[in-house]
Image (cartoon, rainbow, N blue to C red; front, side, top):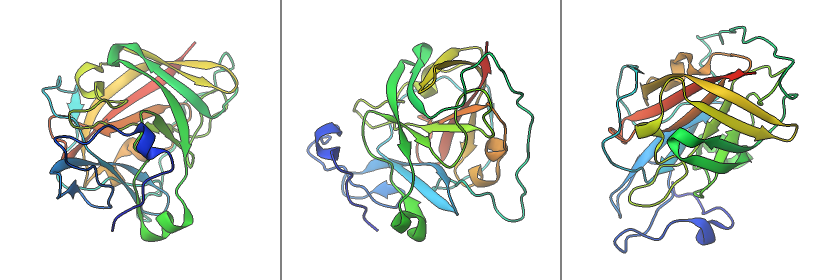
Length: 242
């Protein structure tokens, strides 16, 4: 299935590589261009998110990894057999009230981009597949938590990595590390975070991993892992600091 380009995509997307077009489709790769596709985070009722055009390179290995193999990215609703696990993230009254994210800054990973809300349409939910807008922005999954005090769930922010072109999360695989500091600006203030883990997950097993545990206050960044763009996602988790 081929998905239509988002409004404004033509003005924001990278130029074609070697004259080959970028294609948006609910599939693992773009056969006409040979560009590698990224199956990112998914959510809402088994929705799969496909992110075309990942970068290649030789990134630093994450500190820990998860097993498996596959080609699609998981989704917001956990399988019926797995009840969400609630982990107490605590309520930090020193933080601004929970609010939608507007911008993320992660200096060590070269990230300083706007964050836009991403909510699947009725058609996308019905078909079970979604291609996030191919822009230089990051996207917040609205079905989950918000950064700030009183957040009831994990905040998920996803970003593209593209092949031989600029993309917001291109350096996440090679530069992110435990202990890094980053910040998310919201409508009510700025929330600072410290990275707790940098892991990889096979796209086939991400759906049932603890990435989807309900952890109030936690921030999760997801992109493709540049050592295995076809089968693996990179997951960076962080918790707020005063």
